[in-house]
Length: 416
Image 1 (spheres, rainbow, N blue to C red):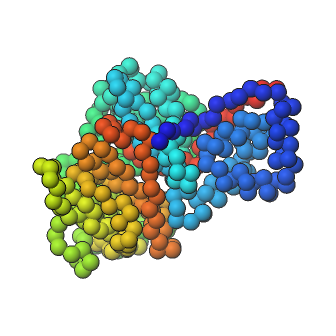
Image 2: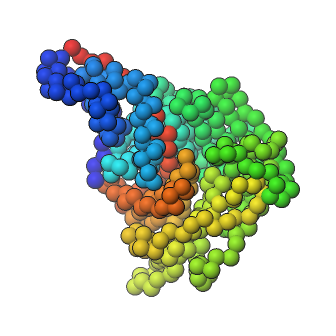
Image 3: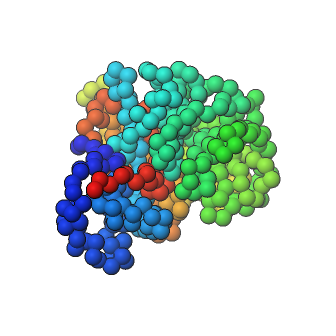
């Protein structure tokens, strides 16, 4: 499947022609026009914006942007406001970032390669770490530094080294980092990560408004006593993990300084035998993917997913994992495919958990995207089509951004 440009190509035409073609649409009441436009994916909306000045002004207005975002995040358990972002290396030294939009079922090309070029030397080995709002964070392996791209401002810059010094791409662990647009909808951001330093969990935080780092040693939580912040105000990061054993760090409301604890998993009577287990951590939750080995005529050891369980930490900091929900078996049958290796990504935004499972079997990659709405207790599977490059895909980072619908590049100039 081919992908589409994030910002549509502009086709010059006389203003009278555009006005005549859109005359009926522009005469509609603003409320009805809003209802029509909010049903479009962001890239389609940007194409519409380039057609005529009245639409450009409407779509670029702060009121419509706010209305579009609120509508997309309240549209149910489907990941309407979320984007699946994949960074792919291209031979010989190129790279491309693609974004998959669930409701439209299409991939879009996100133009970061040209923006990031002035900030990194040619041939630099980049790895995509995280995204939030208009900010996309990359790790440069050659220079061992971080580079952030602001898509709305069409700019890129290097971050100062963290207190741990220069770090290569292999030093960054997905479960232990988080990028947050702060305040929401702005180009400012915070980047947090947790690491074990001299056998002690330490929380590091970079703030873009001060262009500076801070670090704090975490202290051991004295049992499940402190209540976590409401509505996910606090931040959970995994400082270290080995299968079911992990060290969680919490920072936010309810504690004066970062705390750490080692939550245990309860016995799950639905888990069956031992089998293979993949543990995925993110935003104070954990997913256990249970797999079984199947017989294949080849020498490759192949497995299939047998079950997926979601766990949470409850309302108090320092407790054990609690079983939240299990993906229905009939849903698993829809994406049940043989695989040799698998990894995952887990993120929560506004009460919706989003799980991405990335697997490989004989050189072919497969992506599974699941979402769980806590309020409705409902699982959804969003089929992710191939964009034509899954065979031999050299993936260099993957992320889910739930604030991407807030991103609005500057309005193009309309030719008259």
